[in-house]
Image (cartoon, rainbow, N blue to C red; front, side):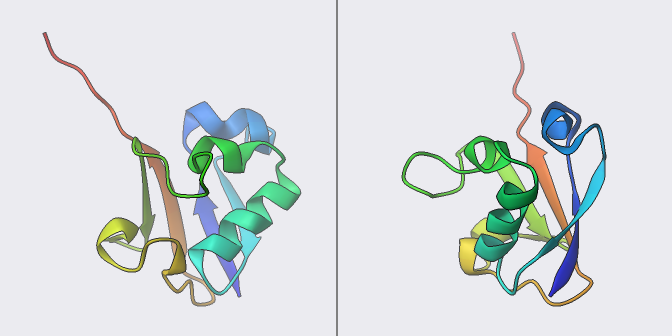
Length: 92
């Protein structure tokens, strides 16, 4: 399955500056594996040392936050959009 992955500015050094790339996979885990294969180093920014999504990285498949769906096993049908969004913190 081919999906379009939107890459945040902070991770574009891994994609040669591209804001959107194509990846393959039937699940989010497979998509991230495909991203890593073609853009070495990106998986370490999305996944922690145990292979789970980093706490401060939000990932959406279409409009669904994967944390509330099936996590890394969220299906990624052909043509869906995946968005990687680093959490933003701030305040006084």
